[in-house]
Image (cartoon, rainbow, N blue to C red; front, side, top):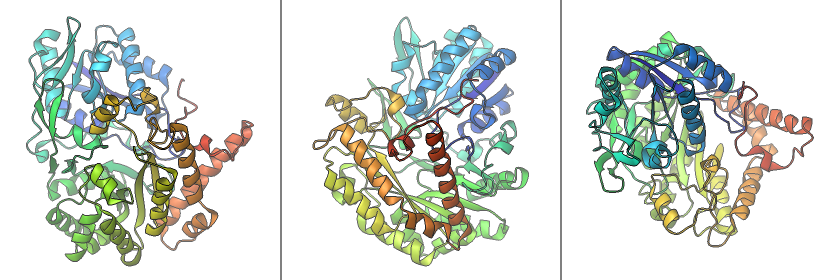
Length: 509
């Protein structure tokens, strides 16, 4: 049985183009590792760093002739490209099994099973279910897999969901990700973004919270099979410090990666783990830095215990905090019980004054149901008061699998149903006070107002190397997009051209 894992060609946000840094998709080496451990022949194609377009991918699939072709996607905006892969692969190799996974297809697989030749969807955490599925298919017929846990499939025209699969009990028991099967030399090639030598890693899975707008926590939640969909309970698990350091050593020593981007939704949840991790990393004395998504309340807790100082000394160089809103009432509506206004303000002040070497990023959500122009600009003012190095202003998006998705559908709020537009920059809903188009216009205005010449100059002249590199990257990419607009006789000052997804030149090749 030969398995091919594929991440197909994707359209890109303008500020993540082929001249910059493609990051390693964590699911590919993790799934490849458990398949290989089970004695299964597995190959991986990640089209983005290899700049492999659709024609080249079709040729590769035909040459490899796998028995199973698998792909996954957490982001709704890329779902159409995954199903494009499904349709193409089934046409090229009609006898192959097509298996999908990831949060998007876990949550709304029923929308695709009846329209595309998908054999199975693996719901939730994939390692255990996927290995069982491949082994079963290798030993018999498709029907032999119908009783396995954690699957969705089409049978006699009806979508079937088997009982939910339990999460892996111990993340340390999973094998080392198969980094050797990935094009590691093509990740982290940017001279400036997550530089030098950036790549992803994770020590934990899931989240302790269940924010109404967030789909991240759903994929690694505890599952109980309900009537219409799985019933989810938030769950956070972590690998041991020793195992995490072992993975970091492989990336750093074998593949010369010097900037590690932790993809954990809540990197710093466990104070004891943070302390032991920082101390272990300091003892290693490696020349590396790392990025992490952090909670502001946990930053303040760890500062009191002297742990933040250790983390920065160990290489923490870039922190992203989910600020989301300036008003605690909005956070309560989000079911977000942490990162309240006071804690967030104090955390950013602490980072600025005590740890100026750390690049400070924050995410903000605009276009909530009760949003007005005045409230949108309050979020802008809050970002300015926080002195965020880079504020990511995102449009409120009802991602499938979230409570917001359910509420928005029940009330008919969603005006654009095409998931291609669920890109966090294109509003797909109006508010009670603003039309969808007005929300988009204000998003463009306030983003442009934050990115001033003085803001850019301050970053470019920073005495801290990492911050300076980030601003050089921002300037270079902005200039590249600007001159492309001029070359194509498009008004380069129209900020709307700087949002949305675009095709790389090699996308169709």
